[in-house]
Length: 457
Image 1 (tube, one colour):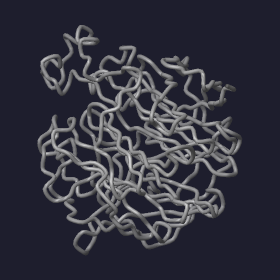
Image 2 (image 1 turned 60 degrees about the vertical axis):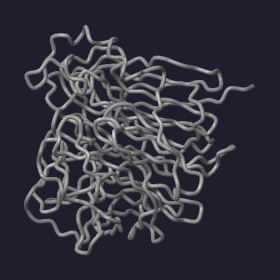
Image 3 (image 1 turned 90 degrees about the vertical axis):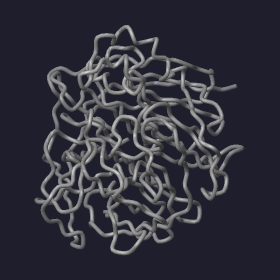
């Protein structure tokens, strides 16, 4: 359900002190260069579906963050690429809940050829931009921490935000931001390790509407959300909620529930991404893709998020997580927690995780997602060919996905990706990772450029 799907990790409450009212500036370090491990896996993308409407040209894979897993990313109008991944170190002690691993943030100002580390002030963990980062039309950058914690008032959630007005050369913050969450329930669920977890999660994208309002999503709980998760009963299945800000991210009002339904997957609806169709018949439509612990789900809104269609499963390139006959034999002797996984439907099944959704300036939609075969035992044996990272492309506003590429296959990965359009139209940078939390053959975030061409009719 979360970014650190280690077998059991989700998030840990740490102790210590952090003032969220003080202003700091994090400095860009030109002197820090990042080097690659000696042995780097190289991947050849596979074409799983094509409709002859688009063609693709990949750049070389580049090391982005040695030791990094599960990237998040932002690109700017100036062509700057900011990538952040968790590293293997523990975060500094602080009172506010933070991710169980420290973050490394790097910047490229030469189209991804070289990367320099961005350092937060001594004593600060900085901001985990899984919560969303955006450059507004006026050039200002907003970066929101992923955790939303209980406020002093009923139905109030508290987040923190950093800002930049100089293309992420310095950051100002953190500042406290507020969310109005009707019937919020911060306390009824543990994390997926059984630990207390008094927080909800901002995730993935912030959208700026034509009128300047902002939209974003949270996954968490409202009162009555008490259905146990499939693999740990103290964790409750989550819902996805939409929020709007009219003051550039300082205050967020609840708009609607994007998806909430009993009996969905092993985790309910989580890890959402939303984006807005910007051209064509469906211009203005909002699309959300969501993880469930099993298959991916999709829902749409044509009224700026006030109402949503019934969430429906979406399967790309026939990568069906229920097709367990495709891999049962491979895992017939594999055990997890002392039990053969072939005897446990929550373990032998596959899972699609952490979707991303990008709306290019040309109107093309790009979806990114990871397929885990099986859902957790893939970190014992990653070699099933479906196991890997994927991109899908739509030229009709999300009705169909005529081009599907598999970036990695049969290697260790957490299956988390990040995609952004660069300052050149139809050119994206995609970041993904090798390894996992206990991998003995290395771990790192790497990425590559991808040029997309629209074929002439």
